[in-house]
Image (cartoon, rainbow, N blue to C red; front, side, top):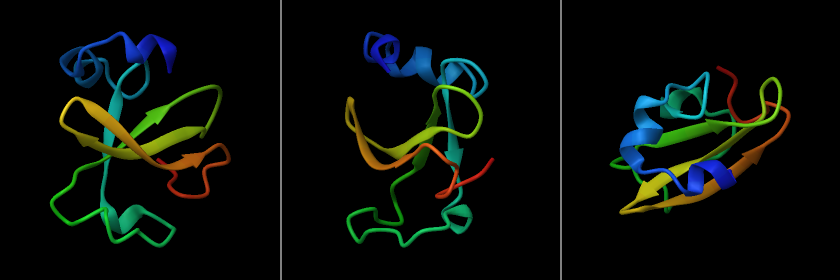
Length: 79
């Protein structure tokens, strides 16, 4: 995450989900209750970290990333 914090959103988006980038998650693929503040107009993003299914999931709010779930075991979403 420290590396990503120094990157632009463009760099992150073109980085691809298998490297340092992110990918979009469809709302229907979330296995947990979606909080009310995560409205339908928000694109849900996942960042992989560590090994396997470990992810940080949330949404972009201007230049910030708002974390909604830390998912170290792949329980919220599995790609």
